[in-house]
Image 1 (cartoon, one colour):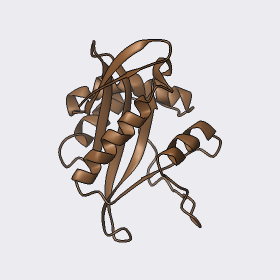
Image 2: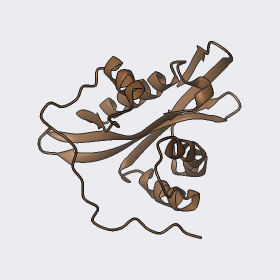
Image 3: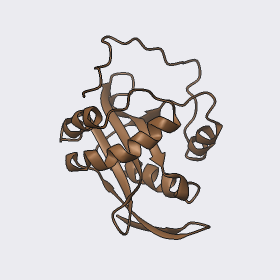
Length: 170
């Protein structure tokens, strides 16, 4: 889908398209920026690309969308993971990561990624879209509120690692 917009400081045009396994390394450049911004430790390009390639294969459990400028340079991405839920009565998805590069933030590109992903997920029969937000990320909270997401009353996320994360490959 070809989408164009005007950034207040720069003219730019972006195409938002589904990402494929061959896009794993390109996504990694954006993912590294996101992980650095969110203080997520242990980013390793080779390890992440090796995890991402099979996840993006049909039936691999992940779906992703990549925003690129007219020269094919990545501007942002959204990755969603899918799962079956009895509670929701079918397949659900969780936004694992949504990131837009600093020069184009506030331009509508995040909304374009989210709207494109939502439409594609609906077409696949996904019945609910969820996400996790840092409690102190007020900008992201307002972004998702504008897109009709709401905190699920009476619930909080708990987790437990079942295995330690793999050591970075050298």
